[in-house]
Each structure stands twice: as structure tokens, then as C-alpha cells.
Length: 148
Image (cartoon, rainbow, N blue to C red):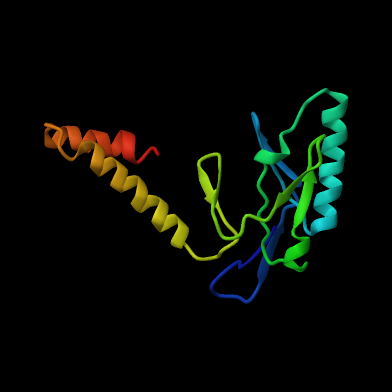
């Protein structure tokens, strides 16, 4: 990842920050990040060796693949994961949830709007016919709905 910005509105000097991160993990949620398919396959190969050494089983069928700006044909947009070499395919434009955020290869925010709309509709259906006060609704919105 890299980001560039102007250091001041008074000059044309540009600052750049770069970060290389091949893996993000939290408990049993892991993201493998690669520049291209070969890079990602090498990272997965190393991780599979680690998992074999430590007798850890990875369920490749539960894995999801997000490809941003693909340079390979659609038929080649997959990787193999785990001991069983399960084929993990590109999930298209459907969002993937990781640690409470939704990721997709589509640059628009349509998926975010639809997810928010769906959560609000669920909340309204649950509370619509309940006998509660305004204070209860404020509390529920702030602690339940906004924490989703």
C-alpha cells in the first residue's frame, strides 16, 4: 500500500508513505495479502508449511478470495488452501466481512448502503410494535444498532 499527499498548501512538495504487509491475523481470522497471484500462492505455501509443522488444520472451503484490479483471466482467478488443496475462487462483487468491516473489490459504496439499510430494517421490525419510550429507543439505537 502506498499513499502520497502534499505536505503544505503553500508548496508542491509531495510526501509518500509505503507499507508492505503480507498477513493480518486476529484469533482465527486471517487475511493473506499479495501483489499478484504468484506472490499470494508463495505466501499460502509458506503458511501451509507452518500449519503442517504445528498440526493446524485450515478449512479452505471457508476461505474467500477478493481480487482487486485483476490482471489474470477470470478462469485463473483462484488459489488453493489447506491440506485438502481446496480451490478458493474470486467471490465477485459480493462483500466479505472481516473483523466487523465489509470488504469488496468494487470501489462503490453500494454494498455498504445496502448492508446498513438491511440492519436498520431488521431493527425496525424488532422494535416496531414494542411498548417503549423515547428514551428506550435512543438507548437501543446508541448501544445496539450503532454497535452492529
